[in-house]
Amino acid sequence: MPIQLDEEGGGTVLAVHVSGKLAKADYEHFVPEFERLVRQHG
Image (cartoon, one colour):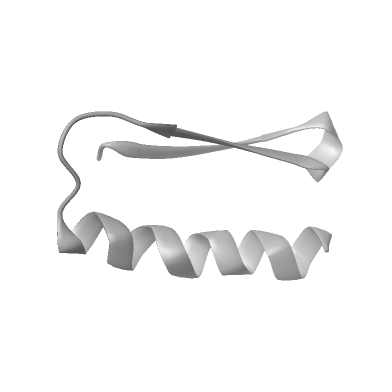
């Protein structure tokens, strides 16, 4: 997957690494995971 999420600083920093061409499926996977992490860590 061209999008990689890495939690850093005990969840206070979310590093997003993007490479290559993004497809709709990549975005559909990224958004719920991003939202979950935001809810979890604020």
